[in-house]
Image 1: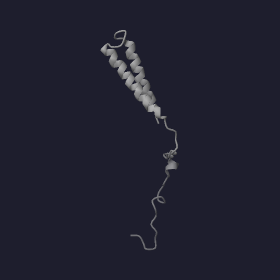
Image 2: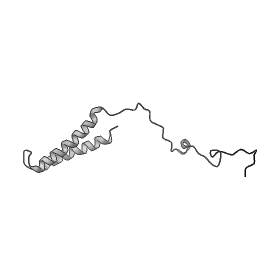
Image 3: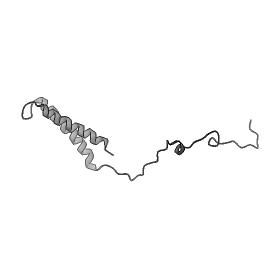
Image 4: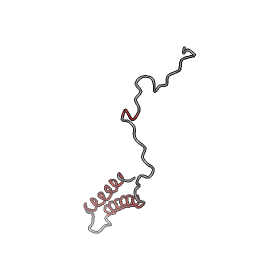
Length: 91
């Protein structure tokens, strides 16, 4: 039991307390006015995804000129992969 005259020590005063900054695990908050992607950027992403999907589907349906061609598949996949790459840069 603690004596009436003794003060209870806080957890920061006990043992080897190390602050988050001292441990290196502190991440400073980002300022509220950080840069955002332009409004058209999201629409560009969606447009590239839909364009790639449409090219691939129309290629397999045989609607595109030149019959079924692997180059249409390449164009559709490049369009979709570029949209995924741009999505990683979206803020």
